[in-house]
Length: 207
Image 1 (cartoon, one colour):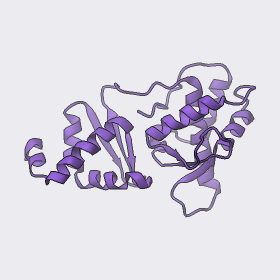
Image 2: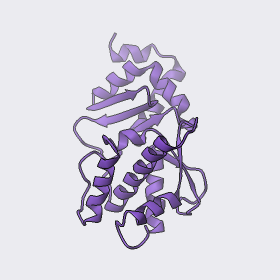
Image 3: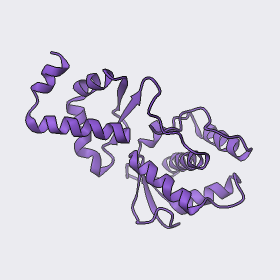
């Protein structure tokens, strides 16, 4: 059965969901069942994975399903449509990834997602001596809002720049920033502290 026939055989509601979920993936890159707002779309993708995968492949996209993490990721096979992060955005993303890894290793919790605060990010930034001044509040706010759009995290309090703002980190972060160990994260952050510019190798681009 070809893609056209398979789509035609869907119920009307499923066709509407197919179009909505496809467009959502194109705009967010990640859909995770660990985000309550994503669960309906995540399970739709599970049920129709082969059809969605073939549909995206026609235009140069690969739909990846990491079942243990509970994450779908859409990747352009030609390297297009990728978010080019500014230096401070890359630093914040790497710090969040570092904090995520350390909390997963040291805290005994049944919660699937990791909780951080904006203060955690600022304190780690200063402790690593990347720059002498704290991160600008506007940069923090804009970066967290950008990562929220990609389903990498969500802020549980209104202002992401508030030091006490709680951030719920989703496992899609592990696909956005792929590293082998904590040392690699420290090395990447040290590269920024030494004045190197640009995004280090390793894929800190979430889309």
